Image 1 (tube, rainbow, N blue to C red):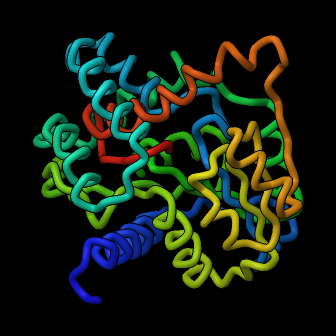
Image 2 (image 1 turned 180 degrees about the horizontal axis):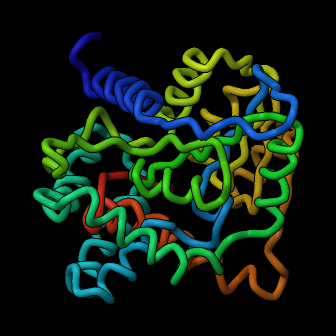
Length: 291
């Protein structure tokens, strides 16, 4: 029925996906025979790097007095509770992003992106999973394009993609006027179904055959994206995704050493929750569960 919260959420996810695909820049082709219809899509947090990329950005911005660590911790706690409640209600999602958007409103895009470059080198580079990077490189070596798909703000996602030599990124899109964030989103955060919408929209724009494409993620939240392609691969999967993979026969790669698994299990989940919220607050956009 039109106008119901469920339909509103579906519409917002569709708008977010289309906006993310439209905002994605494409890097120049590499010097290999191009595969024009095959591509790979990688989630970022806990798939490409340990923890939430946006949370690492938040830490770096706090160190630079961009805002206080108390603001980070307060907002992270709100987002963690939101994630643990598992709500998919559009009103709840909107409420959860409003506090974060207050941080970003009025900030210059160039300022945050410039700081993001520094913080990537300072905090994020050492968090990358070599095994996942090897998977991405394998696709590039076969001439396929490789995209990051994340609830992380699109500017940060694109920065990471550039640093890793990937094709581009799909991320949460915020409204920008005269180079400044307005504090509003275009559609919903790029989470769950919105990621699948973004992948489909990009595939249509770029002429990709999704049956020939591969998607990678650590989270059961990304089952819609994983289900949209011909080959789905779990990387460092959470328990729910591992269970789903075993049920449907999806491939699993786990690069976490046994002695570190417990160490990162809880912080990763909390960082994901905080990352979305903190990310919205500290920089560029808004998000919900994990990025």
